[in-house]
Length: 346
Image (cartoon, rainbow, N blue to C red; front, side, top):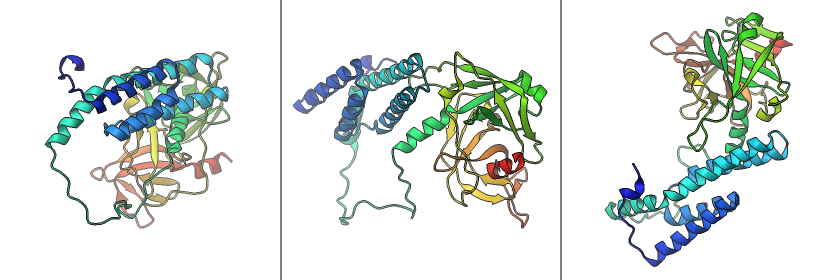
């Protein structure tokens, strides 16, 4: 459906003329590739009009900053940098085109809503529920950086998730790649995800060096570490790497985040309902949403450091997991602590 054919023309007033001029200025910024100026102007526009585009702008800003930083550090080449910039540019232009529709709908909603009561309490801003969920805006940028090192693992008999380390190793679950022979035929895929413009990004594939293989059976630590074969035409360094937290384990109730390829699909992130249930022996238990194909995913703490490798999930109906030394069982998800994995590796 084309919006321009279904929405009534806006009633013109001086304020709307000012908004139209502001949007024209934003378009000019975008066409000149002055994307930071365009984003800042749109933040101001959102504050004035309450059209609720702040989250979109935060993601565009983080993506643009990430590409700029990686280009400056020579982690990506000219082609990939300009491709990322073009995606942000297109996303911003599409956002600008929707502004008249958003403003019209916003005006209609406000005309139907009753006037809110005037609060008696002059102290209007409070932290609700006893916990402060406010985070610095660079938390999103760190999320994007961490996500680049997460890849899809493709084997002859299944699909999982893995992630890249600074030394060029892939970590995943042992039940995904159980042996050097399986590693010979496996491949890993980076950038298996959808961009801001709704278009699939360019996929980059690597093979594995089965001669550099370390693992533990799934009945113990369920991990595989195998060297990735680098490519001169597509260096591994462009994907960055994860960092590990081997000592400090998230406490009960803390948030953890999993970036994954659930069901072998494009890359997803699980942010909501992601609380730690407990830690028992080599395992961390949590409530994060996952699916088949998520095994091997990194479990991140609040600082975007990997604390565990996700490997299993059970419902209460199926008996759940034993989560403490009392033998109590609970449905949820389970990961293997990197603390114990690195002790095993030695």
